[in-house]
Length: 435
Image (cartoon, rainbow, N blue to C red; front, side):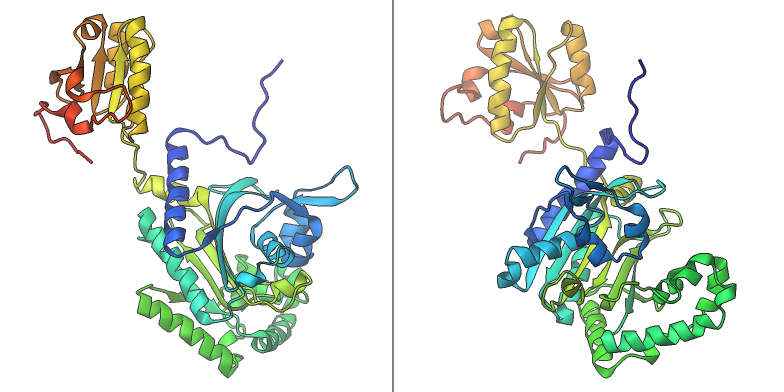
């Protein structure tokens, strides 16, 4: 009987990759708290209509990539392919309007049946940040500054560029869309098959095409700037001036679009050339019409999402993952010492001192494990130490060793006051980092 294999497009994350993944999540959690974004947890599956109505029936995500199934009650459910639709559904059904403008953030797994490639999986993970019920350009700026700080805190901002565009308000967008249809209709037979299909229902997507047949015509296609209303120009101006004031560098990208009609005003992507052709590490925009597509009242909103796997790859490549510092490894010699060390390691950990125990093999193998652990020092306890009420503390970098009387620093009762400094005092071979 063969061993079951992982499903194509999924991954088991371990070791350095798992540490980089965790570093991304931990940094995101720390930064989102600085910006006062509330944490939310969303269901992994929703009614299929939540995504088909919000993402659009004609998009590739809905028509080709969603994992949908019928439950025992005959209802069509879908594993979430993105966060925004579910958050908007929750905003409407849970009465979160009372908190508007509401800043929320989350992270977790998403599911799309697409061709796996570097940094993209069928079960993948994203960070997500949204501001709901805020129509001011300052909300767009807030989200973009948050994203910029996140990339800087992760240590991967170098070589990542913020690409920024405006899609205008509804009036501007409609006029631009009509001009694009007229322009591309004249050359329809020379467009790629995908673009011919998109021409009438989603012409903005043609601007984002990577097909060489389309690129020939995209360069001379009508530009949104020619159709922007005064209000739309003012909105985009406030976004760009806000970014300038916050010190966030940006580059205008007039071909950066969002195909669905509920997207308005700001659209953006943070891109890099360090991940191959699929260089977007974080992207989003303003979606003022989405709540209406879900049956809610007109509600302005803006948000972004970022792939954790892709950010973790950049973090690992840049060598920015911080390894957890192991301070002590306990090496018990004998059963009585093992029992004592179980109590001691619990006390150390309860005081925030990262510790581990080498409990397998003979004395030589235990010391070898201690040396290989990366710990600052070993605490050695054997029958002789227990008999004399003492321990040995050994600097694992220099080999220097000191004897420590337990009564000097260790009290097994309530209110013990021992510290790192007390343990390490006398090891003068190097400077100890005492917190």
